[in-house]
Length: 95
Image 1 (tube, rainbow, N blue to C red):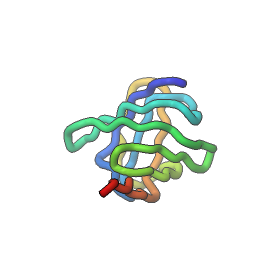
Image 2: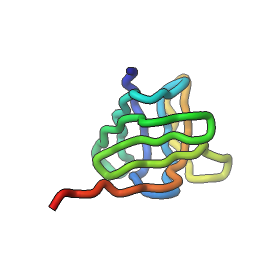
Image 3: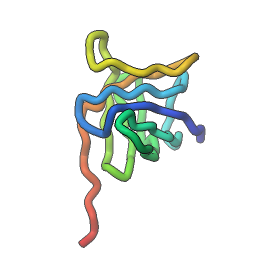
Image 4: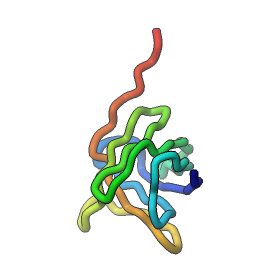
């Protein structure tokens, strides 16, 4: 298990996310800095070269690789992984 910093605008579909890492694997922990202010903790559930799934308090983020021309990204110095949130599955709250 590794711990990485990440940046994103917010946990919404279409938002770009940059992660200061060379490679992600299940079990890794993310400290996500929201560009709108605040932080969000994330746990990597699954990853491949084409997808990643991250559990957060806001729900499960399904990611796909970032493509040139999409939302601007705020990169970290050194190695970076850049993804786009394809879908957010909200966390169900117990009644």
